[in-house]
Amino acid sequence: MDITIVGAGSAGLTLALLLAPSGLNIMLLEQGAAPVQGSADYQRVSALNLASVRLLSALGAWPALAQSAQPYHAMQVWDADSFARIEFDAATERQAQLGFICDNEQIRRALYQQLTQHNNVQFVFNCTINSLVQSEREVLVNINQQQLILSRLLVGADGVNSRVRRDAQLPLTHWDYEQQAIVATISTEVAHHDCARQVFLPTGPLALLPLPGQHKCSIVWSCTPARANELLALDAGAFSQALTAASNSVLGVLKLDNTPNAFALRMRYANSWLRGRIVLVADAAHSIHPLAGQGMNLGLMDVAALGELISEALAQGSDIAEPRLLRRYERWRKAEAQTLILAMEAFKRGFSNAQPLLKLVRAVGMSSVDQLPWLKSKIIAAALGNSGDLPKIARPAGKSARLA
Ligand SMILES: Cc1cc2nc3c(=O)[nH]c(=O)nc-3n(C[C@H](O)[C@H](O)[C@H](O)COP(=O)(O)OP(=O)(O)OC[C@H]3O[C@@H](n4cnc5c(N)ncnc54)[C@H](O)[C@@H]3O)c2cc1C
Image 1: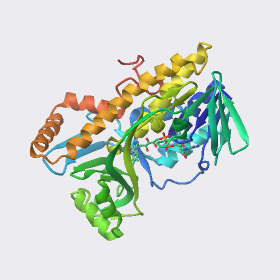
Image 2: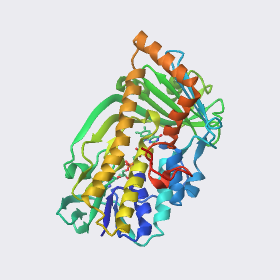
Image 3: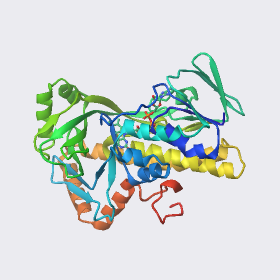
Image 4: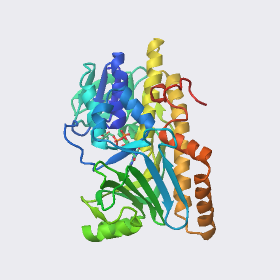
């Protein structure tokens, strides 16, 4: 085997699809089942930015995904506790849309469907990893108590609780955001008009993400564990009432459509993303607060960057796990991850503080930014994935050089 990828989430599948045309022998190991065809239920969604959409389009996965994706053309962010407010819209930014809300499982399905066309990519689903050891020349994985897989490079794309990260003894910095994210699908009285909304409450942000049908949204309601427990103990009617009040009735009366799920929010950052022939990508290397909807986008850019450097190594006839190459990947993507981690921390701290002076500063700051078109455009360009040090495949048309 040339490359073994542990984890067939969005990151692992995208990396396999990026490298499949190179002819490398690729093995994907996934503890869960294979994605099966089916319609979107929007239980878990992600806001994909334009860089991620360009990547998925280049890989041929976008047309299938687009059928269930909801574009959003506007974004409204406000503070429940002050007059702070900021709005973005696609027309001002000369874009057809600001991004798409996509069902996570449909993302996996679209990628998997494309991958099944490549004979050099093999899968083991329902896979248990028993051990993982490496020598100077290869990595040996023992799976399902019976099968040994040798490869030149092993990629840990196995999510926040990465087994690969643990077995490779890559140290982790982590802290608790002291918040839980409640995720659910809701019906809204008022049409969302393709606008993504987020209100910062004293207990954490509440996002209302538009879904197909104008009167459906996915919510990500981040709040303190105590508040989350209170909310989860409510019946559907009382939860819907609390949600309507928290949203300031911006979409009229809101009604819960399914049972909410809660996720504990932690920042995780692997201090080192590689050891020998083992390298980490996406959530295995970093996980951030979902308030800016950037976690999956960040992970997809990791794999696009790694794919680009591996392709360069292949073109030059060098080793795909060459230490210089892997360190270049790590330096490149760590810079992006660190920027987002710091930004999320500043947002979280800034908005969860009820100190009057800080409230005034954030209200004045946010409203001033709203009045400064050039600054707003810079902020939105970064969020859309139209600026920064993007991998080639994800750059907007006309941007050929890497930006410093
Ligand atoms: C509430 C919430 C809302 C979010 N909203 C957004 C958003 O709007 N936009 C955005 O960009 N991001 C968002 N994110 C972040 C996004 O969901 C993650 O960053 C992204 O799903 C990570 O992808 P991944 O492939 O790295 O990991 P995962 O999706 O976790 O995939 C890892 C895969 O590895 C498999 N695996 C794990 N362990 C093993 C093992 N030992 N052996 C084999 N396989 C294994 C798992 O089964 C899984 O299939 C959100 C996150 C949360 C919690």
